[in-house]
Image (cartoon, rainbow, N blue to C red; front, side, top):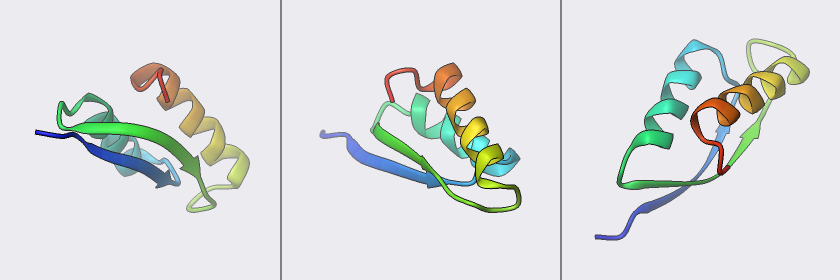
Length: 61
C-alpha cells in the first residue's frame, strides 16, 4: 500500500503539535513538508514552534 503524502500547514499550539506528532510517526503517512501560519500566536512564535516540533519529531522534514 502506498503512503499518503502530506504537507502540513499549521499554527502549532497544543492541538496542532499533537497532530504533527501523529503524522510524523504514522506508518501510512509520508510527511513531505511543514509550513507555519499566523494563528493564535504571532507568525514568529508559530514558526519557532513548528521548527522545534519538526526537529524533535520529524527531523527529515
